[in-house]
Amino acid sequence: MPSCRLSAVLLMILLIPFTVFPQSPEDDGFDSGPLNIPPLEVIIDSALTRSPLLKKYDAALDAEAFNLSFEKRKWLDYLYIEGNTRYGVYDQIYLQGLENGTEPPIGILNQRKQTWYYAGVSVKLPFSTIINRKKHLLQTEKAIEVIRQEKEMMADDLKKTIIEGYYDVLFKYESMHTFYAIYQDLRIAYLDAVNRLQEQKINFHDYAILSSTYGKAKNDYDLAKSDFLKSINMLRFIAGWDF
Image (cartoon, rainbow, N blue to C red; front, side, top):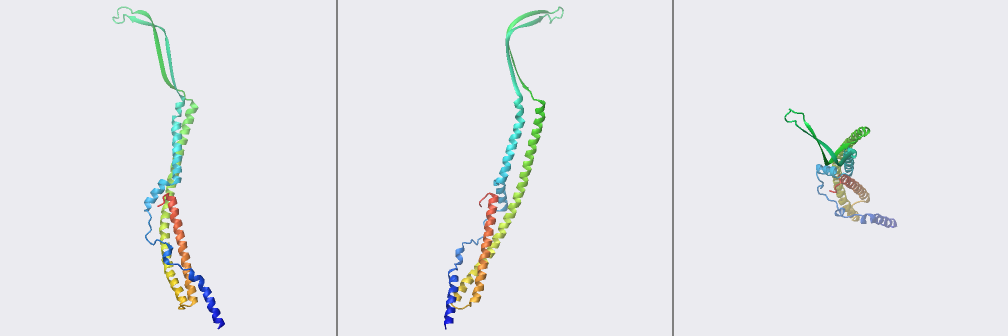
């Protein structure tokens, strides 16, 4: 008789953790509806527009374009505007008798006060500057081309990353959905087993197996949910859009 009482006490102790652990299936907060995610093309366009890395290349292109424009206008530093004004008495000779051609022309000297104006533009560009200017222009144009090619390569890599991340999100969502369905079925079975164990309609060995299977299903679902959330948040980060 004492051994039977001891067994009953041990059974009650074993039952305590399991009777307070179960929760109703609705408490998980899982949205079992379809995945609300924009089309792949829309996400790619968003990534190409908002990517911080591509914006970095755009800034570098703007800087090199400014340098190229500066080099092209640098010859203006050697542009000079010259002017002069003179005032004085000047001799002027007029020839008469050129019309008929029969008599030698007669020169008449005349003196007049006049003001002369002079203005002009000149470029004094050293030969070494001409050579270096052409070299700098070629270097800047080459730098622009290199940055443009690197940006195109980065854009292609970004597209590939978006495509891989997009389908990874779809796969992990379906996996999470599958694990959730398994988890829900086992949870219902587990809650039923708890009641049946209390009513002594199931032995403790079968209950322990079902409890272990239920715990594994819960862990598998939690891992699948974590992987999905990690995947979709990474895709949002790369796209620069919290869709």
